[in-house]
Length: 82
Image 1 (tube, one colour):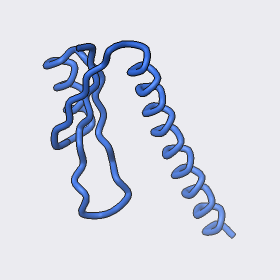
Image 2 (cartoon, helix red, strand yellow; image 1 turned 60 degrees about the horizontal axis):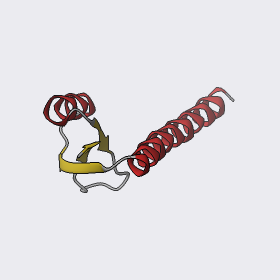
Image 3 (tube, one colour; image 1 turned 90 degrees about the vertical axis):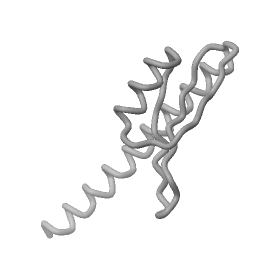
């Protein structure tokens, strides 16, 4: 019974994390539509480094695209005002 509860909790956490990532991405897209927004993409090492580099280089918002499929490289997507 305890293993079942742990498994269900784990899957619920995955679902919540996935929906939070989608909400962040949709918010960035809505912001992009409001202004003239440019986008740069480069290989992502860590999410924190991606955000810091985007802020430092372009004064923008950056995030890593974490794919669920193995062997697909992760990209840092940086959106900023042109």
